[in-house]
Image (cartoon, helix red, strand yellow):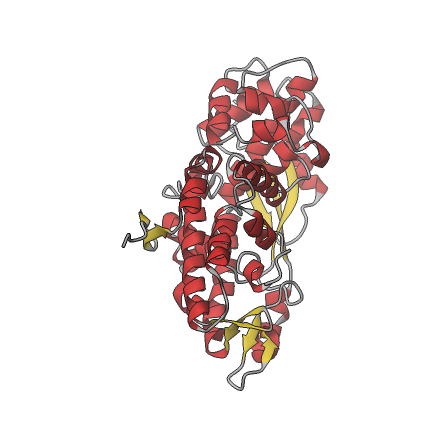
Length: 409
């Protein structure tokens, strides 16, 4: 009797991760999935946390591993999951981030406009499904919440889902920010399915509290670290300047795929065919090679900003809990008046905006608790701590970016 062959990958977070079917192996081996090896998981955070060089590829595999663990636990609790459904659940989370562009969220709006990476992921999944002759039908139904067993989608998209569990542990590990090191194993062991809804056993409440607070701290300390967002804003400004050059008859040197997106604006309805093919050719290296070339461009603005990012000579950023007075912004603009460029170009080096974070959204994809008496209740009803306005309130902070004295010399 032949034994089923299982391929293993060694992961620094979970140890050995198994690839449990030929279809999953084929998807992981596909060039479109392998592209995720060249997409940074944490954007430009490595400019702050030197170890944060991990990729979307590792995160996707980590999500798949956690899905395997969730399936094991739920089956043990007599939740009906067929082999086909188990395979499709793994494929759904494996492919959930395949639509990310270079440096993940950083370039998303600049390249693809109003279409989100989730929508791009679905375009790619549909295209891959055509190639695989419908083998991803169930995975796509789970991903889009069209499958009749709704808890399967909740494992991928929710306030406590396997996607978030992996990126908190993984990003914490690679950045060295220990605040994100959650106990994913305990949370998964406490999962249950009641009336086709994902729930967590009551004794898991403190692990859920730790999970939500870890996410809050990771956002303020890591994902929204002021130096990281200064670098990301600068990259966005650079790409906007590249597009400005194209609009004014100047064509900076860049890869064909990046040139496709920089030379035109792509809408939601355009994101198929040629646009999707070009997107699937994009990764971090297109941006890095561009920056290395643009720092020598004749356009002073493009050249200066590219050189700043390459050399990590970033804009200074000030963050506070109330909006900046326009007079303070004007003072920073005064620093630029010694340079021979238009006033309309000042916004590349001096600009304001806001960032926000929300720990817990009570009415969005609710977290359900299975009480010891067998009843199902909402998290905030199970424990008064989660009714706190502090947890559910959207926290907003305001930033001002401006050049250091030596930046434009």
